Every structure is written in structure tokens, then in C-alpha cells.
Amino acid sequence: MKRYTAAILFTIIALLISTLNLHAAPKYMFKIASLAPGGSVWIDQFNKFAKEITEKTGGEVGFRIYPGGVMGDDQAMFRKMRVGQLHGGGFTMTGISRVVPDFRVMAIPFLFESYQEIDYVKEGLIPDFKKQFRDKGLEFISMTEVGFIYAMSTKAIKTYDAFRSSKNWIPTGDPISEIYLDALDISPVQLTIPDVLPSLQSGLVDTVYNSLYGSIVLQWFTKARYIIDFPYGYAYGVFALNAKKYHKLPKSHQDVIQAAAKTHFPILLKKTRESNVESHQVLQDRGIEFIKLEEETITILREKRDEAIQRLVPDAISQDIQDKTFKLLDEYRKQ
Image 1 (cartoon, rainbow, N blue to C red):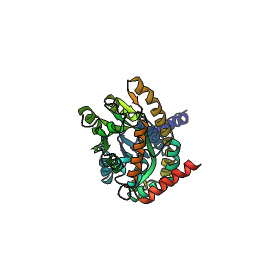
Image 2 (tube, rainbow, N blue to C red):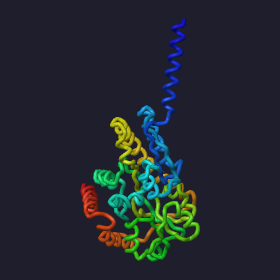
Image 3 (cartoon, rainbow, N blue to C red):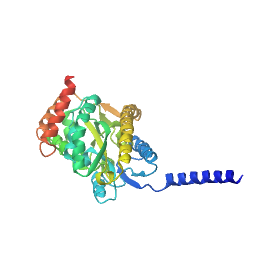
Image 4 (tube, helix red, strand yellow):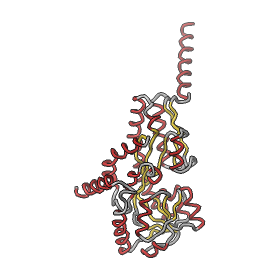
């Protein structure tokens, strides 16, 4: 009887120790920040990604996420990574491209016509991106997506002249948008993403750019009630970690992170695209008006895009990455 009781006690103690280990502070804690709001598909899927890693590393690797821009914009997040206050982030293309300029190449306006084109070009460019991020002390884990973006305004815009006379916003530090709008004879207002909604409310800007789902989660649709029903461009981002801290992990833990990324970020991509499709109907139900552009205006916008591309090299992007991007896009379109 004593042996039986001792065995039970031993089992209970072992279970308690196991439980304590699962809830102990992780040996390797990564503090991660993002501009994505809590409750969005981006943060929800990241939490699942992080949970799987913690479980599969026996609780040794953990993530603490700071969503909704509480750690500042992309540049503030990067500065905090450099001093060890943060160890990674979900960065927008615009913000992190001030560190890795070539990463912005896929954001050229009116470049892509389908997600199939995007996926093909992206896969061809990722090896270059990974190397360039590592050169800057960042470990590129996965690209993320906002999706096709649209011009959204507080007033109906149907013509080139109406578009040119509006007060356009561009993200701070986005030379591609700046060069393109300059070609259109537009002087944009540069703002960080958290400043956009207050600026729409005050009238500082009246035309902004976002995905359909992004306009809902950031509440921009409450002021920008007209959407040009023609994709302006493609918006994306990256999840990256501090390379030094990442490479301190045991190889087995690095492998767990990479495997989880291959599982969860494709799911996130699918959910993001589904959310954008669903958001079209949601916005219509909320009274948003989708505006058709005149064909003449579309022609002008594309011609000015071609003019702007000639001015991007070498200050905005390198000749090498521009050539690779257009070569991949041409390859896909010839298939």
C-alpha cells in the first residue's frame, strides 16, 4: 500500500513539475511589436504561430507581442530592436524599406494585375530579400500581406483632374509614392499610419490608400466614404527577428520557428485575401460608394507610372532588383 501511495505521489509531483515548466518564463523571450491592431487576422494568426513554437520547444521559446503601434511606428520599432528593447516586429513595407531599400520594389503602383503574378515574383525575390535583411542584422522569417490597395477619399473622384486636385496622403519615407505622385503633379502629405485617421477627420488629407480590410480595421472608411474601384498597387510587409538573438537559439529551436512559419504564414496569407474579398461587401453594406474611373484617367495613371519607374534607380531601389522584378513578371506573363 505504501509503495502504491508513493507511486501516486511521484506521478503527481512529476505532473506538477511538468506544469510549472510549461508556465515558467521562457529561456528565450522575443518581444515583438506590430502596427496591426489587436484582434485583426494578422495578430490572431501570429498568436497561433507563437503558441506552436512555445509548445514545440518545451516552453523554452516565447513571444510577447505589442500590437496596434504601442511601440511606435516601424522606425521606432527598429530603433528599439537595435538597443534590445524589442527583438522583432511585423513591419510594413514602407517602414522597413528605409533600412532595406530594395524591399519596396513590389510596391510600384499599377505593377501587378493578379495575386498569381505577385506570388510568382515574390518567390523569386525572397532569396535576395533574405540576404539584404541579414546584412542589416535582421532575420527574415516571412513576408506578410496587406493586399491590393485602393485610393479612398472623402469625395468622389472619377477623373485625373479630380485626383490631382485632392489632398493625397503617402506614408512617411515612401520615395516610390512620392516620385509617382510627383509625376502626376501632386504634392502629397507625408504621415505615419497612426496619424492618418486624425488627419482625415481634420481635413489635412482627403485621399488615402489602403486595402479594403485595412480600411475597416483602421477605421479609415468612417471618413473616406468613396473608393476608386481599381487597384492602385500592392502593399505587404515582413516578420523579422533580431538576427543576433535568433542565431543564439539552438539549431533545433530555429528549425521549429522556420517550420511554424511555413505553416502559419501561408494560412495568414489566405485569411488576409479572404478578408479583403469579404470586406468589399461589408463596405458596400456600410454605405461606401465604389467609383469607376474613366478609361482615359487609367491610361494617364499607367503612363505616369512608366515615367516614374525611370526615376526610381538608384535612389529608391537598385537597378539589379528592378531588373529582377520585371524579368520575373515578364516570365510569368509569358507562361
